[in-house]
Image (cartoon, rainbow, N blue to C red; front, top):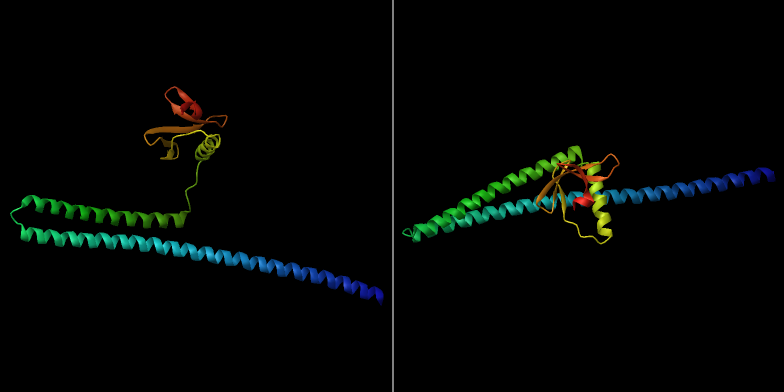
Length: 190
């Protein structure tokens, strides 16, 4: 009887430990789920704010356009003899229309880019992009001042906002710039 009681108590202790483990795991998963829900809410809120901001900018430009049109009409009516002033208002009206068209095109572009990113995910960086990132971080860590390097395409980059270069990795994995004479290590190029 004591043996069975001992076995039963051991079994109960193991079951209590398992229950405690499962309770802890459930609590951890609940916290993780709460964090994911909060992240989703933040993403949705950020998207709404972006749309709201674009809409407000559009309304502001439209209001500005209306205001300029009204001013133009008033000025032409009051000072019909001053063709130069009328021409300047005409310019502002056209500029406002061009700005409005640019805003519409930009808004459409941003919406299309957001749609493509949702469908296809973020842009994947190449080995060259990773090598450039590591190269610049290493130089900055050593206190070196380096010009900005901006990616234009998978192999072309803009250095110091003025020089387009083609970057490659050498057969040994070293970051290089393609020149007329061949590959030049990036450190020597800069």
